Length: 291
Length: 263
Image (spheres, rainbow over the protein chains, first blue to last red):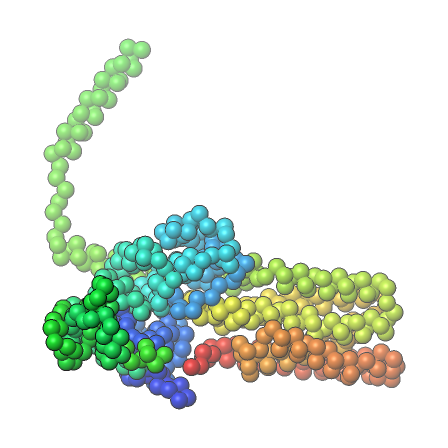
């Protein structure tokens, strides 16, 4: 399975959301990192054939996805960022409904729905109406519906939003077991979610792909930029205003700061091994502040 | 008894023989290349067969009917019952005006269902499915088109018993309904997901007022009634109305495929 994006561009009236992205995706898990407004959702919508690109094309195994139409969508599973539902539907009925749109027979739909409800931990709530679900439960249901048709391409936009740590670990394990011989593309702000399971990280900024590589390789971009230092608690505020602080730990009179900076922030600061979160903060802290 | 014991010993002997033969047999070693070729062929065949067989359109329609809101059918049923009651108690001219009042309203029931995908923010999920949003909208239009036609037929049948002729049902109910639907479709195509709820209801009220204004005097005007009863005039009006409705449906479905999620 191969997905190729060829100079993919999406221009809205005043904004260039996706800017000439060239990308080849083969089987594996891809983590798409970027600040709000980087173009992740627009990119994912184009891959899912929901939005037409302004220019450029997407090919699946050498065929243009627009020409493939139903055949392409049959291989696709998608979880949008703002996931809607019909409130009067129960979890089971909702999955049957989506299964009918995905072309599954009634029998297949029933079997898959029950299996996936069990897998995402909603088997006991299958007859409950979705409007009674918590945010995390709705999200798990969304993940289940994306996997109904055993897709070869799974696109998940912020799939772990609203999940507690235990659910996030369960989700990571689910994706890891699912991803063999499949393309999984997931976007998230929770860096740790992709750090552990992604084979490759794609870093997106202002509509462009600025980095791609294995997590440990991409993380090295931040080498030499991450510092740890101990400062007086009364001075900590000043450092927070002046530098990009990734972590702040108060230990009484002193505060331990983790600072992302091109230059050594203070005397006694020790250069430390970067994490993916440090890289994210290095690239996107300004965008996050703006948003 | 002795015979069966002897048979059992023979069978056991045969089983032992077969067992010893099988123990001496070794499965042949599979050449690695051949094994990989076979696996590759299996993968290709699996990919070729991945696309599920197409369900018939009729089957898909029936399936979708089950997922429509029961409230929509309840409201339509209530309106039909109110018309049935009206046929029993009202005078002919009053009944024709009641038909005129109900015609635009029956139409919006279907449209609220049509816009459900946007109202509940399901459009993105549905668009990414094999049978995408355009096909889903088409099915919903067809389902409610059939339902509305059945309602019109029921009204015509009820009218026969009370002296209201079929052409009168066409002029005072069916055609206003069709033309109101054209207006709703146009507005939905133009304003997309912003046209729902209050806007839809407001349009229905305006259409009702408009039809009342145009046609309210007609039942009391014998000359105009005679003109409208002319088969040629009827056929022409029906032809233009259904043509317009088809055009609006096609345009609406075509626009459903273009993007509706501007930044």
